[in-house]
Image 1: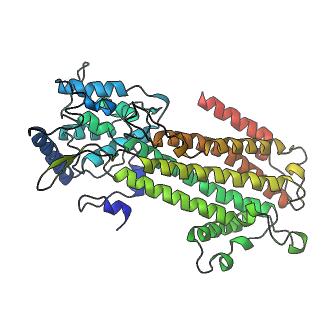
Image 2: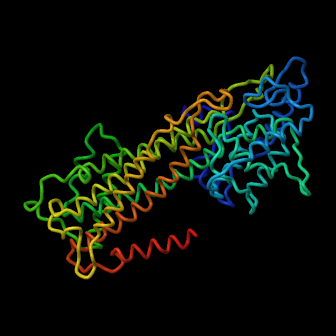
Image 3: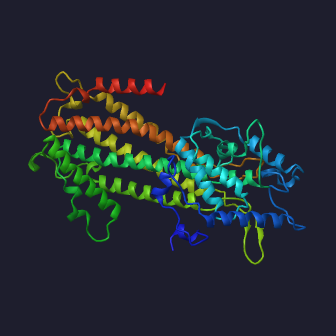
Length: 469
């Protein structure tokens, strides 16, 4: 049984990766059936019955929150919950994309539909309505440690659920606020968005590698199936080699670039060319593993406490909101991004140096088209920045919140780092794409077009800056 299947609490078919990606779109949906609504209703009724029993204490209903668990809850049940919502709505930093917020709201409805949180059915209906709305709340990315779920970002996201107009607020159930913020839905949604972005960058790097190999005058020997597809090889590496070889064939036809005769080039290319299937194959594995972790995190129940069903319904206090899987996924994504740009930088270096570029001009200089030495220096600088962003999230753990959260996974902060890394990598890959395309033109003996010059790059940067603000 797979990891995702093992957490399913019914015979329902869980959403797959593509469905989760689509859930960030206005017309995207996650399943919420009559059976789901019935589970929500039964869980709410169980909670009501359990809290009416003498001697039953439920965290967040009868107690304060977090380190204040030893204090007694206010007799004003609604006010107690709204105080939690208000003191959590203090996030700051860049806003999360609308797709991330929309997907998180739908994921939280999906989690509530597992029937273990005791959320009021009306609150779940409002959650789904908000997710389908054209007006989503602005959600800042900074404020969550991941130890007790999303808390701060999710509080911003769900605040409209409890607004009823004219400044009036209403909380239908006794733990609805806590049940909506004690979750990993926002982090999982953010991770899904970033994994899709990293996937695009990974494919771009396959194309850069193919162009670099052709530009250097090598053939596709390191990528051929007769060498890669021997018994026991990693299929991720095999697939990477196939993809590079396929792109090399296409680019050779388009550009007119041909390999340097074997007698005039080294028997073996440098590692950044020859071992590219191993680097990109390893990145494929890491991306797949990150997606597996994020899929599990997105679909699992992430709440505390749980309202358990069975012959003797009970309240269970534990730590399902602890989002270490998100942090693991973020670390894998950050590793992929760094390795892609490191590989691009090494390949561009080979193209710039007459000692390694097999007859191309130094720094890919061309008459009336300058050279691209400065762009390689930019690429190396961007790679250096990524080194600083590749620190594993585990080193950021510390004790906080009155030592209640005395070990934290740092999932949201790790994801924010990945977002920054992706922004850096987009620029780095754009440099590599320009330089390798220029090398192909020179290898084919053609004139360098204007769009492959430093001047064109400067215009691109100016345009981006004007769009940003």
